Structures are given as structure tokens and as C-alpha cells.
Length: 223
Image 1 (spheres, one colour):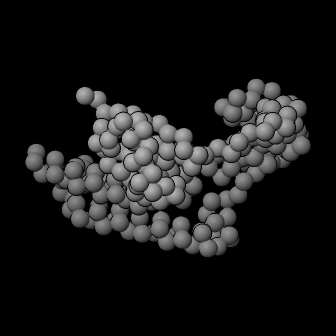
Image 2 (cartoon, rainbow, N blue to C red):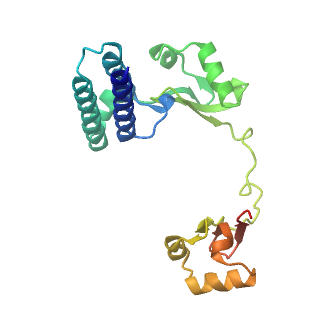
Image 3 (cartoon, helix red, strand yellow):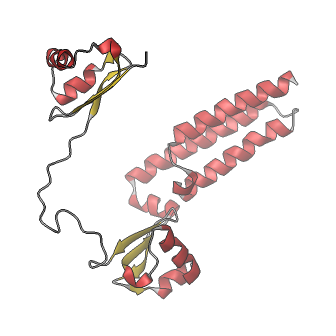
């Protein structure tokens, strides 16, 4: 029993580290080669768990080899367009200038029902509203609506909108984050003046955010 628990813990840690090394993609965002490696890792990890006679070192070694292969493939794909296209395929334009490319749909074995479902997932319920639709290599559908259907933006109505400033955390759980101050080009002395204005010390603050315009949000610690 103890042996089974230890084997499970070891394989859990190894598989978690393996997936972590491969990247942060979700299953639906994986490229074909990444999905294959992930499935193989899960199958290999299951063998030592099902058969206690199998040395766990063999499963760990196989998992590490697969991770190494995936890292090498990723590096090669980054450096070579042809390798990336060979392993992952390429995106396919399904709707072009408002017209469905039926040959493209046949090539990727997509039915009209599949297309409608993917469009609904993008909150598009009328195919005639679509200018372009591209089927990405991970199976997602990218959609560009026609001009008269697209939401109005401030640029369209010539509305003057100030540039959005990114707020950064400058105090977290009572500790000053000096890296954020450096990014915002704010000195600790200036931060202290802000805190004095609010009559609060860093140790009393749970979170404080600040942007380049001086806009700030302060959340005090619970008593």
C-alpha cells in the first residue's frame, strides 16, 4: 500500500513538471505534436501505477525523453517555418469576403453544422455577418465581422480617449515592491509622501496599486 502511494506521488510530481516544462497551453490550445506528447505521457505514467512490477524508473525515463523531444521540436519549429508547417499544419480560410469556401471545408472535413457551432461560440449567429473566418491549426475559429456589423469604437466616432495606463502593485501585504517603483519611475520618497497624505503606513496596507499618472488604489489590511 505504501509503495503504491509513493509511486503515485512520484509520478504525479514527474508528470506535473513535464507538463510545466512543455508550456502553459490548455488542451484546446495545443498544437498536434503537443497533444500527442501529452497523451503519450499520460499513458506511460499509467503503466507503473497499474502494474506494480514495472520499475517506476522506466516510466520516469520515458516521460523525460518525451519532454526532451517536445522541447527540441519546439526549438526547431521556432527556427524553421517548414518544420512548423509540417508538424502543425497551417491555418485555412473558411469564409473569404463573406463567401464560404466549400473546397476548403471539404479539405479540413468540416460540415456546415460544425461551422455554425464554431461561429455561435464567437457570438455570431448569422453567417452573412462574417467577412472572414479562419480555422486555426489548434481548431479554433478566428472571425472578422463585416464593417457595418463591427462594434463602434472611440476611433470610429473620433472620440478623444486618453491612453490607458497600466497600474502596478507597489505595496503587497505590507511590503514595498521596489521593482514596480522603478518601472513607474517613482522614488520611495515620493511613495512615502503619498502614504503620509493618506495617513497610512506600508505595514497597514494589503495592496496598493499605482500608475504613471499617479492614480492609486489602496486596500488596507483587515484588523
